[in-house]
Length: 249
Ligand code: PGA
Image (cartoon, rainbow, N blue to C red; front, top):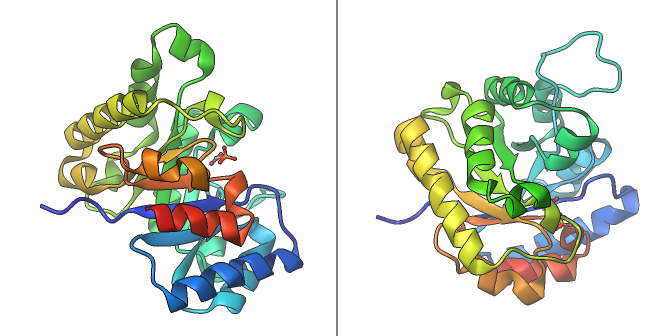
């Protein structure tokens, strides 16, 4: 049996204006000339989704949002709904990123509601989980991640395409990457929880690793069993770095 289709997804976070589209174009052009062995996605800020879609068209780079609201529409100043992302050209959406959980107080239940909204709008969610350093040092990493998975992944995901991203909070933007052995243990645990909770779809969903993935560490990280791709922050902002990671996959 072949494994799940791997994904390398770039999360631009709150970075990028019109001129950054040149980096996205450079990625798309390089992949048009020499196709990637994996799915490739870029998740720019909401203001750039439509412009990126126009710039890249139906090429080799899929476009995703970084978050969406759980409701379809309404009095939610500043928020963006899943339908709006689809309308703007997104196919995927990152949900439950640790920065949203920590800075916007997003609970597992709220993340699950957003996942349902994303599925109704036809978006493929990439659902993020991960422990803090204190939780890892207390020996609770697997327990915390299992609790996040069970509460953030609604049963509605059964039969749907989705991905999970394991992002240890202490590895995000810090230059620290988890040890391959720890990544292997955690990804095997996540796979077991997904398969138990969601059956076949849980068996098929790619499990991405995220946290300071760079061209220099991508090959090692991506060769760990059950690592089905990467969610890349800082190193997705420059086409050359992002392509370095894609080529390592
Ligand atoms: P980083 O971010 O690659 O800059 O560590 C990863 C993420 O937050 O998705």
